[in-house]
Image (tube, rainbow, N blue to C red; front, side, top):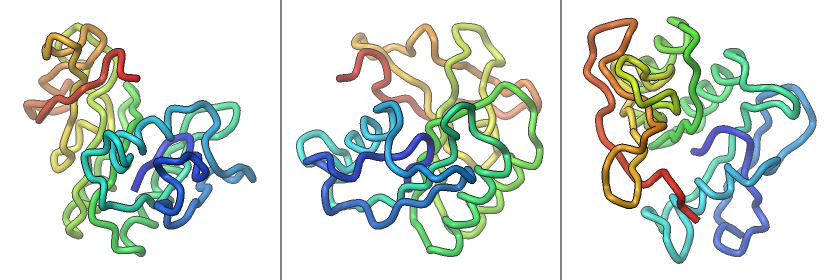
Length: 178
């Protein structure tokens, strides 16, 4: 499952690999609005570079056309993950605004057997900048690395400000990836 601005289902590396596209925002668009969703989906399942090239994507769009993601759209997408029995959720999104509702929802999805990976955030280089929902106890918080295999300057760092959990849990390529 990929959640953010959507995925371009006609991209050659993704064609035939998108199970469904669901817009959780209330607007009428599906697909990718800025390239980010297709880029991340390609990193996950792309034939040439994908780390899980046998997987399929359920595209759950949570970002509106003129705004960020609402808690309601993210909760709707997480509910879709449970009802559709997905295995892994990628949440390439984050917020510095506290939301115990969002953290609780991510933890609930995880207790239902779903692996939830979430971006640590782009609020670095300072400590205590882990974004929500990556700060959820059961989420796998992923920091971004640079070409030198160090945590990218912009990537958020722990520990979590709202609790004492040590995050991020791991790191992966995230700066100047083309």
